[in-house]
Image (tube, rainbow, N blue to C red; front, side, top):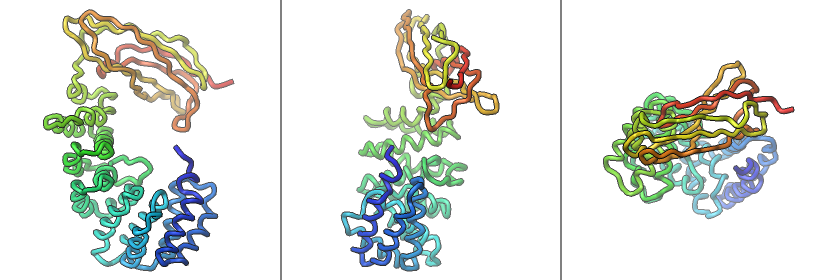
Length: 368
């Protein structure tokens, strides 16, 4: 992932200021240039928020006047890239502050026009929070928009757990309200859109897996050539968590006639920064082929001494009757920004078609 200063740094700030100059707003452009000196040390979201605040402090008051400036800038091909994020946020701020009832829907249309230049998926969250029902009436019309970026915005902007974005409590409480969007888009001709749809359903599966499976089952009943891949991606978390409905929909039946030997660990003590090796055997003792999804689970120790599981994908295999396979893997404990390792007792489990089929314990040691 590029650094914040590479995405929304001096080049983007200077570009935005130049666009405002060409849109007839040189004083606003100068304010943006001066703001660029205050970005050092700020994260990406903080940079966008700072630029948003500068824009709303200097652009003309009222939504209509701000919209005029932004639409003038849209005629400029240089008005694109990460500079668009704070602009979309400023548009939403103006719309939500305006007493004109038409400003709300006008801002949604402007976000749709801005999204091909980068994305408006983060800014639209505040519109959804302010009035979900009213927003969705407009967003539903985007599902047949000729621009794939706008169609994707309909799905991506309404995801329950969109990364980097503010939460929309109503979407978390009632994820079913976006189902008409997803049903309209799962067979979209654009892979860009279909992947967003799958990620949206995967978000739903974290809290309401039964709903996610129900949606995916409906798609599987009316598929096109891309639907199996969309469904696999949409149900990836539900499958890793062993949800019976998700496993059945993907063709993984209970592995009652499959024997697992292991896991055998290569070491029972591993230091933070190193890796642990493990191996196991899987045998199909039945008379018919067995389709298997095999994952492994690391039970990480937490700061309070308890443990929390994390499932990792391993392999998908179909074993013929009587077939046995030996599998070995490595798991790294190198330092990463998304996890803090706490030394102490850990465990590794195997999971076959959602069922735990073997466990081994080991100790994680602090680095010397």
